[in-house]
Image (tube, rainbow, N blue to C red):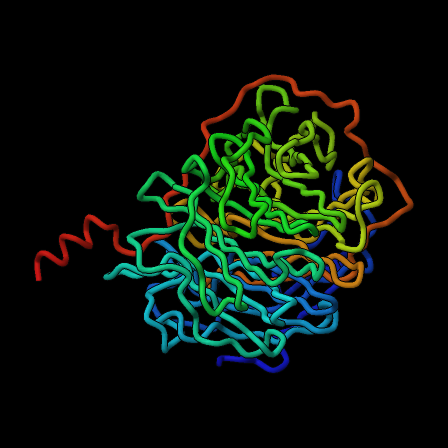
Length: 502
């Protein structure tokens, strides 16, 4: 089971020097809100030493909340060509104050007892009808084909996890899975759960599968109405049972299902993508992060340079929709002035489910460079937080949550130096919590990158407010959009050669 009863806890003031990280958490520039009450808690770290993982690293976390319970999942022991040694989990039942953590059983050989050489892309869901927590992952093998997606289930509140079940029959390749469950008791599809992923062998063909029995079994892989291609979909369920899936296609798009996953529409366009290429060889790009408010309004956030002269750096921008079909104009989150040098990327949005519309409490965690124009040696990476108490009409001053991380402290991946393709934000009893990877200096060749959350964050309803109401796009420029190489073990060509030589 690999369960640690108390979790690893580390709290410290952001106004003090954090010796555990080797970072002095000074608040500078636009990130100047008082953070005396904010602390960081380490919820898990990498205990493995087995090759070929880069230890000690944890990357790409997701978190979901139900009441006071939060469940997070993340890659542990990143393997450069794809995936990780294990998928870690961490669970809190007191609103994020304390955590129990461990690693999913029956999944990877690195953790023992599993058939797969690696696993990747963990995403968390909760099925209220069946009282089941789920973590969907992408299995990776060096020698054989695998199921497209696996789902690990917990029926005891996120503390004990069953061996994973397969979502679909075996395939040659899959990428970027996500999972959501319909937990609105009045929905006609209450208890349905939905998994999304794409097939790199068909040019990132979008696929969906549905479960009606708490994730024990899954229906056939179903394409969109026009067999569209895309990557990074994040399905959400509205109170009426409509499923909306924001996703990156040739732009930011979304598709829907109004019949419980029996069929899926063709994607509609949310916006084109105009993105600055983040410096330093970091793994990033305009993959969407999505969340839903209590009334069913869907928000999608991504990095974008349209408000910056010559596409010199990225803001975080968003669009909203009440039905997944009609979307608002792209709006900038005013973390700093459009004349600043700050580059913002890898956002994770969350919305308090008890709020909606013009009083929605919205929170976003994100990574940023204070100076966009930098190199692998000079770039300095940090985590920030910003919130709105009025549905995005205005925003509170941003908060800087970490000190400066050097890129040399990050593990490598097939798509660059890595903290993850996504992070996340979840609300417990009105309080926002994010999960994110924080790295410190290496000890020799050993990394020091663990999974953290911040305590003491709020969504203030008073104090200085920031607005982007007068901002207008300046151009239609964009750097080339990064094309991700899929998470794989031995590439299929080498795998075939290996089989033919036996």
